[in-house]
Structures are given as C-alpha cells and as structure tokens.
Length: 319
Ligand code: TXA
Ligand code: MG
Image 1 (cartoon, rainbow, N blue to C red):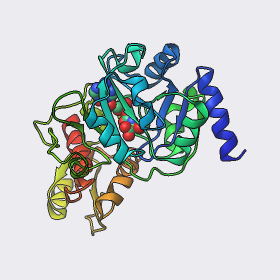
Image 2 (image 1 turned 180 degrees about the vertical axis):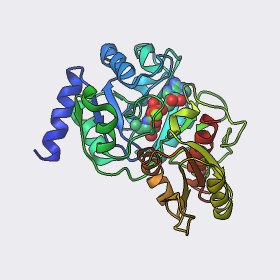
Image 3 (image 1 turned 45 degrees about the vertical axis):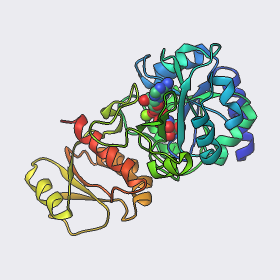
Image 4 (image 1 turned 90 degrees about the vertical axis):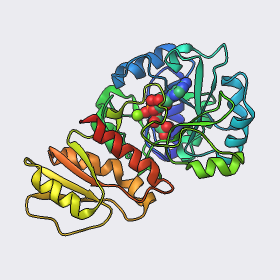
C-alpha cells in the first residue's frame, strides 16, 4: 500500500472511532476523533493516562480556531497565522459544544496544526479535529519513530502511520492565550524569541524553575528508567558516571573518550540535532539497562531551551 492509501485507511479508522498513531514533526501522536468521547476515553485507557490530563486537539489550520475556542483571542490568531503549521500549541477558552473529556475537564482547549505532511494529509482526509497525546504509555519517553510506537503500544493501537523520524524531536511549545499576556506553559519546538517576534511584546513564563506548568505536565513524562543527572561539562559528566556505581552512561553533545564500563551515548553539537535525537538516546539508555545516565545539555538557546527543560525534568523525576 502507498502512503496515500494508508492515510485514507487511517481517516476511515478515526471516523469509526478507532485509534490511529500518526507522525508529527515533533513526536508521534496517538489520535482519536476529538468529538467521539468513547474513542477519547480509549486514548486515556491505552496510554494509562489520568483522565484529568488534557489532550491536544490537532487541526488543519487557523481557520479551525473558532470551531473549538470561544472567544479566539487576537494573540492566538496572530501566533497561529505566523507559526502554523508548526510545533506550537495554543490554549484558549473551550467552545461549549467541544466535549470536556478531551480537555481533561478543563474549561480550556489546546489546539495545534502539525507541519508533518502525513499529519496534514490525515487531517484533510478526516476532516475534523484529532485529539492526540504523544503515542507512548504514560510516564514513558515520547516516540519519534513508528517502531517506537509499536514497541510501546503494541496491538492497543489499531493503525500506525509511518512517517519516518520526527524532524523536531521534542514536543510542541504550549502557550496560554487566555490572559492579557501570552504565557509559555511548556517550552518546545518554537522558541520564546519567535513568539515575541510575532507578538511584539514579551511572553511570560519562560522556561526555568519557577515557570508555570501545564496541567498534566509531569516530570516523569520525559524520563527514561535510568536515574538522570545533568552535568555542566563533559569532564564533570565522566566523573559522575564513574563514581555512580552500577550500570552508568553519559549522554553528550559530541563524542568523547569515556572510561571503560561507562556507556557513551552521543546526541549532537547543534541544539536542533540534539533535540531530534534526544528521545532515541533516552530509549537507548533503557535498552542498555542503564541505572544512571549523566547528560550534558546543549547550549540553552533556540530549541536547546526545550532540550534542557526535558533533561531537567528527567533529572527531577528520578530524584
Ligand atoms: O508536540 C506535541 O505537542 C505532541 C504531538 C503529538 O502533537 N503532543 C503532546 O501531547 O505532547 P501530550 O498529551 O503528551 O502533552 C500535551 C500536554 C498535556 O500534558 C498538557 O500539559 C497540555 O498539553 N495541555 C493540553 N490541554 C491543555 C489545556 N487545556 N490547558 C493547558 N495545558 C493543556
Ligand atoms: Mg507526552
């Protein structure tokens, strides 16, 4: 079957209330018809996700905002016109006819138009909103390939569309557009600078320890089984991995000589390359059975902010 046939099959499956995993430019999503409350309930069940953790509804574009949100704030309109399709999720007040279940009972709704061509084809063929969390079991690392989805969800997902390795590799940036100032709830594929360029004013809640969190954003979402420690330099990482005891590894932006017995996982010097490989490397740490993973984050600029955020959360999850 060619991609087109797969996409049409997937759209038909969604319309029947089935679950479809599909590629986006960030991570793979586990999709259901956003207006089918039974299908949405199955997403929560398959993921093992608490029902008060809201889902993101994926839409084709800005023209869909008014169908799900009431009112549509000017900030959301400007941001989505400039940055959709892309790794940006906007939170607005939920329109009355949109089921509360999809939003985990929140009075708001999170919307995103993904840029992956297969996701766009699927949205066009389906013709409605697709509610989709990342296609992993609750508390596991997000999938960036179709094989990751199958390994994690097995037969619990009716159909998996294969769109290759996700180009961005970390989840979308989530912004709250319900207040006077746009607030970043989760850093991701769109940088705070890009948001500020569009808005012409500062955004709130830039990543950092005191930053507001989106409901349902748990640190454990982004953690491998190994205990994660973040080191500032390669030298520090090697020392800590050696001292750790047990099966230890390091995750570095570039290759380095490591002591015998320490596993070497290499991401990329460039923050975008690091983001693309991050979850594959965390999965690798699980496959190697590592008990300790000492990571050196990329430079905290651009998408490096989101990578550092995920590594910090992973470190807190095991703390
Ligand atoms: O890149 C992404 O955003 C990926 C792909 C599949 O689109 N999706 C994703 O979904 O990361 P998930 O379920 O793993 O994370 C969605 C997060 C929730 O944990 C929650 O924090 C936030 O989005 N969220 C959803 N609805 C919200 C709402 N109404 N208000 C605030 N935060 C919300
Ligand atoms: Mg997730």
